[in-house]
Amino acid sequence: MPGTDTTLIALDWGSTQLRAYRLGDAGAVQELRTSGDGASRISGGATGFEDALRRLAGDWLDSGAPVLGCGMVGSAHGWREAPYVDCPLALDALHQHLVPVVMTGGGTLHLVPGLRDRGAEDGLPDVLRGEETQLAGLLAAQPAASSAGLTVVLPGTHSKWVRLRAGRVDGFATHLTGELFALLREQSVLGRLMVAGAAFDGAGFDRGVAAARQSRDLTRLLFSVRSLGLLGELAPEALESYLSGLLIGAELAAALCTIVPEAPIALVGEPTLGELYRRALALAGREARLHTAPLAADGLWHIARGAGWV
Amino acid sequence: MPGTDTTLIALDWGSTQLRAYRLGDAGAVQELRTSGDGASRISGGATGFEDALRRLAGDWLDSGAPVLGCGMVGSAHGWREAPYVDCPLALDALHQHLVPVVMTGGGTLHLVPGLRDRGAEDGLPDVLRGEETQLAGLLAAQPAASSAGLTVVLPGTHSKWVRLRAGRVDGFATHLTGELFALLREQSVLGRLMVAGAAFDGAGFDRGVAAARQSRDLTRLLFSVRSLGLLGELAPEALESYLSGLLIGAELAAALCTIVPEAPIALVGEPTLGELYRRALALAGREARLHTAPLAADGLWHIARGAGWV
Image (cartoon, rainbow over all chains, first blue to last red; front, side, top):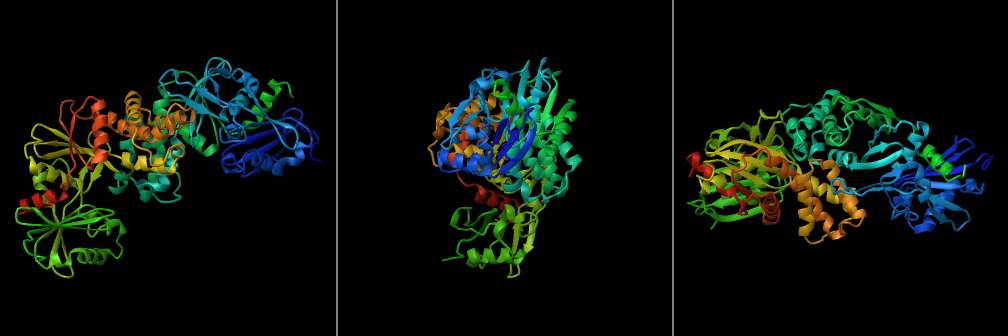
Protein backbone atom coordinates (compact mmCIF):
# COMPACT_ATOMS: atom_id res chain seq x y z
CA MET A 1 0.00 0.00 0.00
CA PRO A 2 1.70 3.25 -1.07
CA GLY A 3 2.47 5.60 1.76
CA THR A 4 2.77 2.94 4.40
CA ASP A 5 6.14 2.92 6.11
CA THR A 6 7.29 6.05 4.28
CA THR A 7 9.74 7.93 6.47
CA LEU A 8 11.60 9.91 3.81
CA ILE A 9 11.14 10.56 0.11
CA ALA A 10 14.68 10.85 -1.24
CA LEU A 11 15.28 12.29 -4.70
CA ASP A 12 18.53 11.80 -6.62
CA TRP A 13 17.70 14.27 -9.38
CA GLY A 14 20.47 14.66 -11.91
CA SER A 15 20.72 16.25 -15.35
CA THR A 16 19.32 13.34 -17.28
CA GLN A 17 17.45 11.22 -14.76
CA LEU A 18 15.24 11.43 -11.69
CA ARG A 19 15.58 8.59 -9.19
CA ALA A 20 13.03 8.63 -6.38
CA TYR A 21 13.48 6.42 -3.31
CA ARG A 22 10.79 5.70 -0.74
CA LEU A 23 12.68 5.03 2.47
CA GLY A 24 11.28 3.22 5.52
CA ASP A 25 11.94 3.45 9.21
CA ALA A 26 15.62 2.61 9.29
CA GLY A 27 16.38 4.23 5.97
CA ALA A 28 15.86 0.99 4.07
CA VAL A 29 14.75 1.39 0.47
CA GLN A 30 11.10 0.34 0.22
CA GLU A 31 10.73 1.28 -3.41
CA LEU A 32 12.72 2.93 -6.22
CA ARG A 33 11.18 4.65 -9.22
CA THR A 34 13.08 6.32 -12.04
CA SER A 35 12.14 8.57 -14.92
CA GLY A 36 13.91 10.39 -17.73
CA ASP A 37 12.79 13.75 -16.35
CA GLY A 38 16.31 14.94 -15.63
CA ALA A 39 16.79 18.56 -14.60
CA SER A 40 18.20 19.52 -17.99
CA ARG A 41 15.17 18.06 -19.78
CA ILE A 42 12.44 19.89 -17.92
CA SER A 43 10.88 23.05 -19.29
CA GLY A 44 8.28 25.25 -17.67
CA GLY A 45 10.29 26.20 -14.57
CA ALA A 46 9.02 25.25 -11.11
CA THR A 47 5.72 23.97 -12.49
CA GLY A 48 7.57 21.62 -14.82
CA PHE A 49 9.61 20.22 -11.94
CA GLU A 50 6.62 19.76 -9.65
CA ASP A 51 4.65 18.07 -12.43
CA ALA A 52 7.54 15.68 -13.10
CA LEU A 53 7.78 14.80 -9.41
CA ARG A 54 4.03 14.24 -9.04
CA ARG A 55 3.92 12.09 -12.16
CA LEU A 56 6.56 9.81 -10.73
CA ALA A 57 5.73 9.84 -7.01
CA GLY A 58 2.53 11.80 -6.38
CA ASP A 59 1.10 8.97 -4.28
CA TRP A 60 4.15 9.03 -2.03
CA LEU A 61 3.78 12.77 -1.44
CA ASP A 62 0.31 12.12 -0.01
CA SER A 63 1.97 10.34 2.90
CA GLY A 64 3.22 13.69 4.19
CA ALA A 65 6.73 12.31 4.64
CA PRO A 66 9.58 14.83 4.29
CA VAL A 67 11.05 15.20 0.80
CA LEU A 68 14.75 15.78 0.25
CA GLY A 69 16.51 16.12 -3.10
CA CYS A 70 20.07 16.45 -4.34
CA GLY A 71 21.78 16.99 -7.67
CA MET A 72 21.14 19.32 -10.59
CA VAL A 73 17.58 19.95 -9.37
CA GLY A 74 19.29 22.52 -7.11
CA SER A 75 21.37 24.19 -9.82
CA ALA A 76 20.76 27.64 -11.26
CA HIS A 77 18.76 25.98 -14.04
CA GLY A 78 17.00 23.55 -11.69
CA TRP A 79 13.80 23.82 -9.66
CA ARG A 80 15.37 26.38 -7.37
CA GLU A 81 19.02 27.24 -6.85
CA ALA A 82 20.59 25.86 -3.69
CA PRO A 83 23.75 28.01 -3.67
CA TYR A 84 27.15 26.37 -3.37
CA VAL A 85 28.53 26.14 0.17
CA ASP A 86 32.25 26.74 0.59
CA CYS A 87 34.81 24.15 1.62
CA PRO A 88 36.09 23.15 4.05
CA LEU A 89 32.74 21.83 5.19
CA ALA A 90 31.82 19.04 7.59
CA LEU A 91 29.46 16.66 5.80
CA ASP A 92 27.46 16.47 9.05
CA ALA A 93 26.69 20.19 8.61
CA LEU A 94 25.08 19.84 5.18
CA HIS A 95 21.58 19.82 6.70
CA GLN A 96 22.16 23.39 7.94
CA HIS A 97 22.26 24.61 4.33
CA LEU A 98 19.12 23.00 2.89
CA VAL A 99 16.97 25.22 0.70
CA PRO A 100 13.19 24.80 1.12
CA VAL A 101 10.82 24.81 -1.85
CA VAL A 102 7.11 25.10 -1.02
CA MET A 103 5.18 23.10 -3.58
CA THR A 104 2.03 24.46 -5.18
CA GLY A 105 0.22 21.22 -4.58
CA GLY A 106 1.11 21.14 -0.91
CA GLY A 107 4.16 20.07 1.06
CA THR A 108 7.75 21.27 1.08
CA LEU A 109 10.77 19.85 -0.70
CA HIS A 110 14.26 20.61 0.59
CA LEU A 111 17.30 20.78 -1.67
CA VAL A 112 20.86 19.84 -0.71
CA PRO A 113 23.39 22.46 -1.84
CA GLY A 114 26.49 21.76 -3.93
CA LEU A 115 29.99 22.61 -2.74
CA ARG A 116 32.49 25.18 -3.91
CA ASP A 117 36.26 25.03 -3.57
CA ARG A 118 37.47 28.60 -3.92
CA GLY A 119 40.77 27.42 -5.39
CA ALA A 120 42.98 29.12 -2.83
CA GLU A 121 45.84 26.77 -3.71
CA ASP A 122 46.06 27.29 -7.46
CA GLY A 123 43.57 30.03 -8.29
CA LEU A 124 41.15 27.64 -9.99
CA PRO A 125 37.80 27.45 -8.23
CA ASP A 126 35.75 24.30 -8.57
CA VAL A 127 32.21 23.12 -7.98
CA LEU A 128 30.32 19.91 -7.40
CA ARG A 129 26.65 19.12 -6.96
CA GLY A 130 25.24 15.74 -6.03
CA GLU A 131 28.57 14.22 -5.03
CA GLU A 132 28.34 15.86 -1.58
CA THR A 133 25.38 13.57 -0.89
CA GLN A 134 27.22 10.48 -2.13
CA LEU A 135 30.09 11.38 0.18
CA ALA A 136 27.70 11.74 3.11
CA GLY A 137 26.36 8.29 2.24
CA LEU A 138 29.85 6.81 2.03
CA LEU A 139 30.85 8.16 5.44
CA ALA A 140 27.51 7.28 7.07
CA ALA A 141 28.42 3.62 6.64
CA GLN A 142 31.94 4.04 8.02
CA PRO A 143 32.23 7.28 9.98
CA ALA A 144 35.88 6.71 10.90
CA ALA A 145 37.05 6.10 7.32
CA SER A 146 38.23 9.67 6.79
CA SER A 147 39.61 10.31 10.27
CA ALA A 148 43.24 10.27 9.12
CA GLY A 149 42.52 11.56 5.60
CA LEU A 150 40.86 9.87 2.66
CA THR A 151 40.81 10.68 -1.03
CA VAL A 152 37.56 9.76 -2.74
CA VAL A 153 37.61 9.49 -6.53
CA LEU A 154 34.24 9.56 -8.30
CA PRO A 155 34.97 8.76 -11.96
CA GLY A 156 32.50 9.77 -14.62
CA THR A 157 31.73 12.38 -17.24
CA HIS A 158 33.25 14.91 -14.86
CA SER A 159 35.54 12.98 -12.57
CA LYS A 160 35.88 14.30 -9.00
CA TRP A 161 38.83 13.94 -6.61
CA VAL A 162 37.71 14.86 -3.10
CA ARG A 163 40.00 15.28 -0.11
CA LEU A 164 38.27 14.28 3.13
CA ARG A 165 39.57 14.52 6.67
CA ALA A 166 37.68 13.79 9.88
CA GLY A 167 34.31 13.91 8.13
CA ARG A 168 35.11 17.22 6.47
CA VAL A 169 35.52 18.02 2.76
CA ASP A 170 38.78 19.96 2.60
CA GLY A 171 38.74 20.51 -1.14
CA PHE A 172 38.29 18.84 -4.49
CA ALA A 173 39.15 18.95 -8.18
CA THR A 174 37.15 18.07 -11.26
CA HIS A 175 38.55 16.53 -14.45
CA LEU A 176 36.71 16.55 -17.77
CA THR A 177 38.02 13.05 -18.52
CA GLY A 178 34.81 11.15 -19.29
CA GLU A 179 33.38 13.83 -21.52
CA LEU A 180 36.68 14.15 -23.40
CA PHE A 181 36.77 10.40 -23.97
CA ALA A 182 33.25 10.31 -25.36
CA LEU A 183 33.84 13.30 -27.64
CA LEU A 184 37.15 12.02 -28.98
CA ARG A 185 35.87 8.51 -29.57
CA GLU A 186 32.65 9.55 -31.25
CA GLN A 187 33.40 12.83 -32.98
CA SER A 188 37.13 13.20 -33.61
CA VAL A 189 39.58 11.94 -36.21
CA LEU A 190 40.83 9.51 -33.55
CA GLY A 191 37.58 7.57 -33.62
CA ARG A 192 37.84 6.91 -37.36
CA LEU A 193 40.56 4.29 -36.98
CA MET A 194 38.80 2.52 -34.11
CA VAL A 195 36.62 -0.57 -34.29
CA ALA A 196 33.20 0.30 -32.87
CA GLY A 197 32.25 -1.92 -29.97
CA ALA A 198 35.66 -3.56 -29.68
CA ALA A 199 36.28 -5.50 -26.46
CA PHE A 200 38.43 -3.93 -23.76
CA ASP A 201 42.12 -4.35 -24.64
CA GLY A 202 44.17 -4.53 -21.47
CA ALA A 203 47.56 -4.14 -23.14
CA GLY A 204 46.35 -1.09 -25.08
CA PHE A 205 44.87 0.48 -21.96
CA ASP A 206 48.03 -0.13 -19.94
CA ARG A 207 50.17 1.33 -22.73
CA GLY A 208 48.04 4.48 -22.65
CA VAL A 209 48.37 4.79 -18.87
CA ALA A 210 52.13 4.31 -19.11
CA ALA A 211 52.48 6.91 -21.86
CA ALA A 212 50.51 9.44 -19.80
CA ARG A 213 52.67 8.77 -16.75
CA GLN A 214 55.80 9.33 -18.83
CA SER A 215 54.69 12.54 -20.58
CA ARG A 216 52.37 15.28 -19.40
CA ASP A 217 51.89 16.50 -22.96
CA LEU A 218 48.25 15.50 -23.41
CA THR A 219 47.53 17.35 -26.69
CA ARG A 220 50.42 15.42 -28.23
CA LEU A 221 49.62 12.11 -26.54
CA LEU A 222 46.14 12.26 -28.03
CA PHE A 223 47.52 12.51 -31.56
CA SER A 224 49.53 9.34 -30.90
CA VAL A 225 46.24 7.42 -31.06
CA ARG A 226 46.19 8.33 -34.73
CA SER A 227 49.91 7.86 -35.40
CA LEU A 228 50.06 4.44 -33.77
CA GLY A 229 46.95 3.41 -35.68
CA LEU A 230 48.11 4.74 -39.06
CA LEU A 231 51.51 3.09 -38.70
CA GLY A 232 50.02 -0.22 -37.63
CA GLU A 233 51.78 -0.15 -34.25
CA LEU A 234 48.47 -0.58 -32.44
CA ALA A 235 45.63 -2.69 -33.81
CA PRO A 236 42.35 -0.90 -34.58
CA GLU A 237 40.73 -3.03 -31.85
CA ALA A 238 43.16 -1.65 -29.24
CA LEU A 239 42.90 2.07 -30.02
CA GLU A 240 39.81 2.81 -27.95
CA SER A 241 41.34 1.21 -24.86
CA TYR A 242 44.60 3.07 -25.51
CA LEU A 243 42.72 6.38 -25.66
CA SER A 244 40.93 5.50 -22.43
CA GLY A 245 44.27 4.68 -20.80
CA LEU A 246 45.78 7.98 -21.99
CA LEU A 247 42.97 10.06 -20.51
CA ILE A 248 42.58 8.21 -17.23
CA GLY A 249 46.37 8.04 -16.96
CA ALA A 250 46.68 11.80 -17.48
CA GLU A 251 44.05 12.45 -14.82
CA LEU A 252 45.78 10.14 -12.37
CA ALA A 253 49.29 11.40 -13.05
CA ALA A 254 48.16 14.95 -12.30
CA ALA A 255 45.82 14.23 -9.41
CA LEU A 256 48.17 11.89 -7.56
CA CYS A 257 50.69 14.75 -7.32
CA THR A 258 48.19 16.77 -5.27
CA ILE A 259 47.39 14.23 -2.55
CA VAL A 260 49.37 12.77 0.31
CA PRO A 261 51.25 9.75 -1.06
CA GLU A 262 50.11 7.48 1.77
CA ALA A 263 46.48 8.62 2.03
CA PRO A 264 44.05 5.80 1.26
CA ILE A 265 41.94 6.10 -1.88
CA ALA A 266 38.31 5.11 -2.24
CA LEU A 267 36.72 4.76 -5.68
CA VAL A 268 33.00 5.39 -5.97
CA GLY A 269 31.19 4.59 -9.19
CA GLU A 270 29.80 2.00 -11.52
CA PRO A 271 31.79 -1.23 -11.76
CA THR A 272 33.16 -1.03 -15.32
CA LEU A 273 34.61 2.46 -15.09
CA GLY A 274 35.59 1.97 -11.45
CA GLU A 275 37.59 -1.10 -12.43
CA LEU A 276 39.48 0.88 -15.11
CA TYR A 277 40.48 3.46 -12.50
CA ARG A 278 41.46 0.73 -10.05
CA ARG A 279 43.63 -0.85 -12.72
CA ALA A 280 45.27 2.45 -13.66
CA LEU A 281 45.88 3.30 -9.99
CA ALA A 282 47.50 -0.11 -9.51
CA LEU A 283 49.89 0.67 -12.39
CA ALA A 284 50.88 3.77 -10.41
CA GLY A 285 51.48 1.60 -7.36
CA ARG A 286 48.33 2.74 -5.54
CA GLU A 287 45.65 0.50 -4.12
CA ALA A 288 42.06 1.68 -4.06
CA ARG A 289 38.88 0.19 -2.67
CA LEU A 290 35.97 0.29 -5.13
CA HIS A 291 32.44 1.08 -3.89
CA THR A 292 29.87 0.30 -6.54
CA ALA A 293 26.63 0.50 -4.52
CA PRO A 294 24.51 3.65 -5.11
CA LEU A 295 25.07 6.07 -2.23
CA ALA A 296 22.60 8.91 -2.83
CA ALA A 297 19.72 7.39 -0.81
CA ASP A 298 22.05 6.66 2.11
CA GLY A 299 23.40 10.19 1.95
CA LEU A 300 19.95 11.79 1.86
CA TRP A 301 18.88 9.65 4.81
CA HIS A 302 21.96 10.72 6.74
CA ILE A 303 21.31 14.40 6.00
CA ALA A 304 17.63 14.05 7.01
CA ARG A 305 18.77 12.45 10.25
CA GLY A 306 21.07 15.41 10.86
CA ALA A 307 18.08 17.70 10.37
CA GLY A 308 16.13 15.69 12.95
CA TRP A 309 13.47 14.57 10.46
CA VAL A 310 14.01 10.86 10.83
CA MET B 1 45.04 31.28 -73.21
CA PRO B 2 45.19 28.12 -71.07
CA GLY B 3 48.36 26.11 -71.41
CA THR B 4 50.54 29.00 -72.38
CA ASP B 5 53.44 29.52 -70.03
CA THR B 6 52.62 26.40 -67.99
CA THR B 7 55.81 24.99 -66.49
CA LEU B 8 54.37 23.02 -63.58
CA ILE B 9 50.90 22.03 -62.44
CA ALA B 10 51.11 22.05 -58.65
CA LEU B 11 48.36 20.40 -56.58
CA ASP B 12 47.84 21.12 -52.90
CA TRP B 13 45.32 18.35 -52.32
CA GLY B 14 44.14 18.10 -48.74
CA SER B 15 41.30 16.26 -47.00
CA THR B 16 38.63 18.82 -47.71
CA GLN B 17 39.94 20.90 -50.60
CA LEU B 18 41.88 20.68 -53.84
CA ARG B 19 43.94 23.74 -54.77
CA ALA B 20 45.50 23.63 -58.22
CA TYR B 21 48.21 26.12 -59.23
CA ARG B 22 49.40 26.73 -62.77
CA LEU B 23 52.99 27.88 -62.41
CA GLY B 24 54.97 29.75 -65.04
CA ASP B 25 58.63 29.91 -65.95
CA ALA B 26 60.05 31.18 -62.68
CA GLY B 27 57.52 29.40 -60.50
CA ALA B 28 55.21 32.38 -60.47
CA VAL B 29 51.53 31.54 -59.99
CA GLN B 30 49.73 32.15 -63.31
CA GLU B 31 46.40 30.87 -62.07
CA LEU B 32 44.83 29.25 -59.01
CA ARG B 33 41.70 27.12 -59.05
CA THR B 34 40.08 25.45 -56.07
CA SER B 35 37.38 22.87 -55.58
CA GLY B 36 35.73 21.06 -52.68
CA ASP B 37 36.96 17.70 -54.02
CA GLY B 38 39.16 17.01 -51.01
CA ALA B 39 40.72 13.57 -50.72
CA SER B 40 38.31 12.52 -47.99
CA ARG B 41 35.31 13.45 -50.12
CA ILE B 42 36.15 11.47 -53.24
CA SER B 43 34.67 8.06 -53.87
CA GLY B 44 35.38 5.72 -56.74
CA GLY B 45 39.11 5.27 -56.08
CA ALA B 46 41.65 6.35 -58.71
CA THR B 47 38.94 7.09 -61.25
CA GLY B 48 37.26 9.45 -58.81
CA PHE B 49 40.50 11.31 -58.22
CA GLU B 50 41.37 11.59 -61.91
CA ASP B 51 37.85 12.81 -62.70
CA ALA B 52 38.09 15.45 -59.98
CA LEU B 53 41.43 16.67 -61.31
CA ARG B 54 40.22 16.80 -64.92
CA ARG B 55 37.07 18.65 -63.92
CA LEU B 56 39.15 21.34 -62.26
CA ALA B 57 42.20 21.52 -64.52
CA GLY B 58 41.74 19.26 -67.54
CA ASP B 59 42.73 22.06 -69.93
CA TRP B 60 46.01 22.56 -68.06
CA LEU B 61 46.86 18.85 -68.34
CA ASP B 62 46.70 19.19 -72.13
CA SER B 63 49.80 21.41 -71.94
CA GLY B 64 51.89 18.34 -71.08
CA ALA B 65 53.51 20.16 -68.15
CA PRO B 66 54.62 17.96 -65.23
CA VAL B 67 52.06 17.47 -62.46
CA LEU B 68 53.11 17.30 -58.81
CA GLY B 69 50.78 16.89 -55.82
CA CYS B 70 51.09 16.89 -52.05
CA GLY B 71 48.80 16.27 -49.09
CA MET B 72 46.18 13.66 -48.31
CA VAL B 73 45.97 12.72 -52.02
CA GLY B 74 49.01 10.57 -51.17
CA SER B 75 47.56 8.93 -48.06
CA ALA B 76 46.44 5.31 -47.76
CA HIS B 77 42.92 6.50 -48.59
CA GLY B 78 44.04 8.89 -51.34
CA TRP B 79 44.69 8.42 -55.04
CA ARG B 80 47.70 6.27 -54.36
CA GLU B 81 49.72 5.88 -51.18
CA ALA B 82 53.05 7.69 -51.13
CA PRO B 83 54.57 5.93 -48.11
CA TYR B 84 55.98 7.99 -45.26
CA VAL B 85 59.72 8.68 -45.43
CA ASP B 86 61.66 8.55 -42.17
CA CYS B 87 63.29 11.50 -40.46
CA PRO B 88 65.88 12.85 -40.35
CA LEU B 89 65.42 13.84 -43.98
CA ALA B 90 66.92 16.68 -46.00
CA LEU B 91 64.06 18.63 -47.61
CA ASP B 92 66.20 18.83 -50.76
CA ALA B 93 65.95 15.04 -51.01
CA LEU B 94 62.15 14.90 -51.09
CA HIS B 95 62.17 14.63 -54.91
CA GLN B 96 63.94 11.26 -54.60
CA HIS B 97 60.85 9.77 -52.95
CA LEU B 98 58.13 10.88 -55.36
CA VAL B 99 55.54 8.25 -56.27
CA PRO B 100 54.39 8.26 -59.91
CA VAL B 101 50.74 7.71 -60.86
CA VAL B 102 50.07 7.06 -64.55
CA MET B 103 46.73 8.61 -65.43
CA THR B 104 44.20 6.75 -67.55
CA GLY B 105 43.62 9.81 -69.69
CA GLY B 106 47.33 10.31 -70.36
CA GLY B 107 50.17 11.87 -68.45
CA THR B 108 51.74 11.10 -65.11
CA LEU B 109 51.15 12.71 -61.75
CA HIS B 110 53.80 12.49 -59.03
CA LEU B 111 52.97 12.50 -55.34
CA VAL B 112 55.14 13.92 -52.57
CA PRO B 113 55.43 11.54 -49.58
CA GLY B 114 54.66 12.44 -45.99
CA LEU B 115 57.23 12.09 -43.22
CA ARG B 116 57.46 9.76 -40.24
CA ASP B 117 59.25 10.40 -36.97
CA ARG B 118 59.86 6.97 -35.45
CA GLY B 119 59.67 8.42 -31.95
CA ALA B 120 63.09 7.21 -30.85
CA GLU B 121 63.13 9.80 -28.07
CA ASP B 122 59.87 9.02 -26.31
CA GLY B 123 58.46 5.93 -28.01
CA LEU B 124 55.67 7.89 -29.70
CA PRO B 125 55.92 7.81 -33.49
CA ASP B 126 54.40 10.65 -35.45
CA VAL B 127 53.40 11.43 -39.01
CA LEU B 128 52.78 14.44 -41.20
CA ARG B 129 51.63 14.81 -44.81
CA GLY B 130 51.51 18.08 -46.70
CA GLU B 131 53.55 20.06 -44.20
CA GLU B 132 56.81 18.67 -45.69
CA THR B 133 56.00 20.64 -48.84
CA GLN B 134 55.20 23.82 -46.90
CA LEU B 135 58.56 23.45 -45.15
CA ALA B 136 60.30 23.05 -48.50
CA GLY B 137 58.57 26.23 -49.63
CA LEU B 138 59.58 28.10 -46.49
CA LEU B 139 63.24 27.15 -46.85
CA ALA B 140 63.30 27.76 -50.61
CA ALA B 141 62.82 31.45 -49.89
CA GLN B 142 65.53 31.58 -47.23
CA PRO B 143 67.81 28.56 -47.52
CA ALA B 144 70.02 29.61 -44.61
CA ALA B 145 67.16 30.08 -42.13
CA SER B 146 67.58 26.66 -40.58
CA SER B 147 71.37 26.47 -40.68
CA ALA B 148 71.75 26.85 -36.91
CA GLY B 149 68.43 25.21 -36.02
CA LEU B 150 64.89 26.44 -36.49
CA THR B 151 61.61 25.33 -34.97
CA VAL B 152 58.65 25.72 -37.31
CA VAL B 153 55.20 25.69 -35.75
CA LEU B 154 52.26 25.06 -38.08
CA PRO B 155 49.12 25.65 -35.98
CA GLY B 156 45.85 24.13 -37.07
CA THR B 157 43.47 21.25 -36.50
CA HIS B 158 46.55 19.14 -35.89
CA SER B 159 49.30 21.50 -34.90
CA LYS B 160 52.85 20.53 -35.92
CA TRP B 161 56.14 21.43 -34.26
CA VAL B 162 59.00 20.66 -36.62
CA ARG B 163 62.68 20.76 -35.72
CA LEU B 164 64.83 21.81 -38.70
CA ARG B 165 68.59 22.02 -38.93
CA ALA B 166 70.67 22.75 -42.01
CA GLY B 167 67.76 22.11 -44.35
CA ARG B 168 66.98 18.79 -42.71
CA VAL B 169 63.86 17.75 -40.77
CA ASP B 170 65.25 16.20 -37.58
CA GLY B 171 61.89 15.37 -36.04
CA PHE B 172 58.45 16.68 -35.23
CA ALA B 173 55.47 16.37 -32.92
CA THR B 174 51.75 16.77 -33.56
CA HIS B 175 49.24 18.21 -31.11
CA LEU B 176 45.49 17.70 -31.43
CA THR B 177 44.89 21.26 -30.19
CA GLY B 178 42.69 22.70 -32.94
CA GLU B 179 40.42 19.70 -33.12
CA LEU B 180 40.06 19.63 -29.32
CA PHE B 181 39.13 23.30 -29.31
CA ALA B 182 36.44 22.86 -31.95
CA LEU B 183 34.96 19.79 -30.25
CA LEU B 184 34.92 21.35 -26.80
CA ARG B 185 33.45 24.62 -28.00
CA GLU B 186 30.77 23.07 -30.16
CA GLN B 187 29.89 19.79 -28.51
CA SER B 188 30.84 19.82 -24.83
CA VAL B 189 29.30 21.14 -21.63
CA LEU B 190 31.92 23.93 -21.78
CA GLY B 191 30.33 25.44 -24.85
CA ARG B 192 26.96 25.83 -23.15
CA LEU B 193 28.07 28.77 -21.04
CA MET B 194 29.75 30.55 -23.97
CA VAL B 195 28.35 33.32 -26.10
CA ALA B 196 28.37 32.16 -29.71
CA GLY B 197 30.37 34.47 -31.95
CA ALA B 198 31.79 36.54 -29.09
CA ALA B 199 34.73 38.77 -30.00
CA PHE B 200 38.23 37.70 -29.02
CA ASP B 201 38.84 38.50 -25.34
CA GLY B 202 42.54 39.18 -24.77
CA ALA B 203 42.41 39.05 -20.99
CA GLY B 204 40.52 35.75 -21.04
CA PHE B 205 42.97 34.26 -23.54
CA ASP B 206 45.99 35.41 -21.54
CA ARG B 207 44.49 33.99 -18.35
CA GLY B 208 44.08 30.63 -20.07
CA VAL B 209 47.69 30.66 -21.29
CA ALA B 210 48.92 31.58 -17.81
CA ALA B 211 46.87 28.82 -16.17
CA ALA B 212 48.26 26.26 -18.60
CA ARG B 213 51.82 27.40 -17.94
CA GLN B 214 51.25 27.07 -14.19
CA SER B 215 49.60 23.63 -14.24
CA ARG B 216 50.08 20.71 -16.62
CA ASP B 217 46.80 19.17 -15.49
CA LEU B 218 44.83 19.69 -18.70
CA THR B 219 41.79 17.52 -17.87
CA ARG B 220 41.30 19.65 -14.75
CA LEU B 221 42.11 22.97 -16.46
CA LEU B 222 39.40 22.28 -19.00
CA PHE B 223 36.77 21.93 -16.28
CA SER B 224 37.78 25.36 -14.96
CA VAL B 225 36.09 26.85 -18.04
CA ARG B 226 32.85 25.66 -16.51
CA SER B 227 33.66 26.51 -12.89
CA LEU B 228 34.79 30.05 -13.71
CA GLY B 229 31.69 30.54 -15.83
CA LEU B 230 29.24 29.09 -13.29
CA LEU B 231 30.73 31.16 -10.48
CA GLY B 232 30.69 34.34 -12.54
CA GLU B 233 34.47 34.76 -12.31
CA LEU B 234 34.74 34.91 -16.10
CA ALA B 235 32.12 36.56 -18.28
CA PRO B 236 30.32 34.32 -20.79
CA GLU B 237 31.89 36.46 -23.55
CA ALA B 238 35.41 35.57 -22.31
CA LEU B 239 35.04 31.81 -21.92
CA GLU B 240 35.79 30.87 -25.52
CA SER B 241 39.01 32.87 -25.53
CA TYR B 242 39.95 31.39 -22.14
CA LEU B 243 39.47 27.87 -23.54
CA SER B 244 41.58 28.80 -26.56
CA GLY B 245 44.30 30.11 -24.23
CA LEU B 246 44.22 26.95 -22.12
CA LEU B 247 44.68 24.66 -25.11
CA ILE B 248 47.29 26.70 -26.96
CA GLY B 249 49.01 27.35 -23.63
CA ALA B 250 49.12 23.63 -22.84
CA GLU B 251 50.58 22.87 -26.27
CA LEU B 252 53.22 25.56 -25.88
CA ALA B 253 54.14 24.68 -22.31
CA ALA B 254 54.81 21.10 -23.36
CA ALA B 255 56.41 21.76 -26.73
CA LEU B 256 58.76 24.50 -25.53
CA CYS B 257 60.33 21.99 -23.12
CA THR B 258 61.42 19.86 -26.05
CA ILE B 259 63.27 22.47 -28.09
CA VAL B 260 66.48 24.40 -27.59
CA PRO B 261 65.60 27.53 -25.54
CA GLU B 262 67.45 29.85 -27.92
CA ALA B 263 66.39 28.30 -31.24
CA PRO B 264 64.38 30.74 -33.34
CA ILE B 265 60.74 29.94 -33.96
CA ALA B 266 58.83 30.45 -37.19
CA LEU B 267 55.04 30.32 -37.27
CA VAL B 268 53.35 29.23 -40.48
CA GLY B 269 49.63 29.55 -40.88
CA GLU B 270 46.64 31.75 -41.39
CA PRO B 271 46.83 35.16 -39.72
CA THR B 272 44.15 34.85 -37.01
CA LEU B 273 45.35 31.60 -35.53
CA GLY B 274 48.98 32.48 -36.16
CA GLU B 275 48.52 35.68 -34.19
CA LEU B 276 47.09 33.74 -31.22
CA TYR B 277 50.17 31.51 -31.17
CA ARG B 278 52.45 34.52 -31.51
CA ARG B 279 50.70 36.15 -28.56
CA ALA B 280 50.91 33.00 -26.41
CA LEU B 281 54.59 32.53 -27.29
CA ALA B 282 55.25 36.15 -26.28
CA LEU B 283 53.68 35.43 -22.87
CA ALA B 284 56.25 32.65 -22.53
CA GLY B 285 59.00 35.10 -23.42
CA ARG B 286 59.53 33.73 -26.92
CA GLU B 287 59.46 35.74 -30.12
CA ALA B 288 58.25 34.16 -33.30
CA ARG B 289 58.06 35.34 -36.88
CA LEU B 290 54.70 34.70 -38.52
CA HIS B 291 54.51 33.60 -42.17
CA THR B 292 50.99 33.83 -43.49
CA ALA B 293 51.56 33.43 -47.24
CA PRO B 294 50.57 30.02 -48.68
CA LEU B 295 53.71 27.92 -49.15
CA ALA B 296 52.54 24.77 -50.93
CA ALA B 297 53.06 26.09 -54.48
CA ASP B 298 56.56 27.33 -53.61
CA GLY B 299 57.38 23.99 -52.05
CA LEU B 300 56.12 21.99 -55.03
CA TRP B 301 58.12 24.23 -57.38
CA HIS B 302 61.22 23.68 -55.27
CA ILE B 303 60.74 19.90 -55.27
CA ALA B 304 60.17 19.89 -59.05
CA ARG B 305 63.38 21.87 -59.47
CA GLY B 306 65.20 19.26 -57.38
CA ALA B 307 63.86 16.61 -59.74
CA GLY B 308 65.19 18.58 -62.71
CA TRP B 309 61.75 19.15 -64.21
CA VAL B 310 61.84 22.94 -64.16
